[in-house]
Amino acid sequence: MKNYRIELIGLLLLCGIFMSRCGAGLDTLYTGLYANGEADVYVTAPTGLAIGWFELSYKNKTLTRKGAVSTAAVGSAVSLSLTSSGRALIAGFNYAAGSNLGYFARNTATGQLTFSSSILAGGINENILGVTTNSSRSSYVYVVAPSGANTKVTAVSVDETTQSLAALTSVSSGGAGPFAVGLSPGGQHLVTTLTASFGVVPVTGDLSGSLTPYATSYASDFAFHSNGNYLYWNNTATFQVAYGTYSSATGTVAFTGNLGSGNGVGQTAVAVDPQNDFMATLGTSVANVGNIELWRLNGGGVPTPTASPLPLPAITQPLLPTPNAPTDLAFDKSGRFLFAVDCNQKKLWAFELDHSAGTLTALSGSPYDASDLQCLRNVVVSDSREAD
Image 1 (cartoon, rainbow, N blue to C red):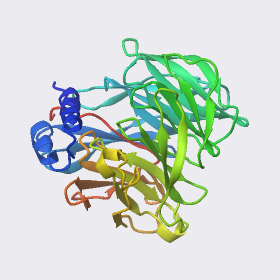
Image 2: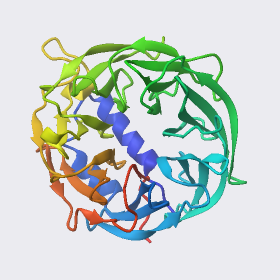
Image 3: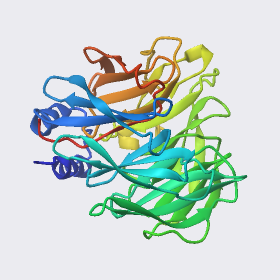
């Protein structure tokens, strides 16, 4: 079984070295690395007590419903992350029956999931609302949960041999907030959203000390540019897309400004495609329910004398009909496909992104019905693998 991840990373590095946008060469990348492979798309269904599984065919540009794995042994799954090896899916749960974090073994040849074990990470009655895996230290994941007026981040060790988890140390932010967590592209810092700030703590595997808050603006989701210099998030106070800078040397996050009109269009999700050509945001308000806004990144996210770190929102495409309750977005690893889930209609949406034209086209059959799973909350996409 061949995994295309290393080849993709190498090609992306060449794009960066020669300072050319990858969009023009993405067709070559697509046909070379992803012509005949498949990827797995997993969605949380907290009210349906399941994790749904779909299979993306790169050759046919189709999505197929493969099944679901029950989460009844642990409870309602509300966050997901794949380990860097792809051998495990770690799911965060609303606290129930003494646990809130689950290990699901993944067959890397077929994508099939099997529940293995669960633990209590953090404390009693804490819901794991965010999970992120460490790509450079595959034996660790990090989870975030509210703890009274504080946000608590916990390091968890992952043993893929015994298919088990073990909670390690927790650090407190000293403040409350929405709950998203992620690692900087270089893996130097763990970042989580707080009320009107980002909390940052250095990462050496385990965690120690406390998160340092950096005042920015209200956010519930964020995404890094892969060059590590820029951070993009949804400003839930002004209903705009916000952007700022991140320093890998100091771990500081600085708010730069907002984009968009702030017309009451709430943004619940932010995603940057792996080619760094585009950022996608998901709107939720009555005025713009279900809109996916596609933002073209300027010069790969690098500022120029005549442009800001982020470009103007050159493309706005209202692709999801009302009434909807979209909750999450995710690109596949090639940057060619974008997925969105919504709660009210219980559907998974799939689009192909044309990097040259900057357009999204729904895949045949999209949206895909998942009414048996009920509300869909999160979506993650695996690396490419050979077709079954």
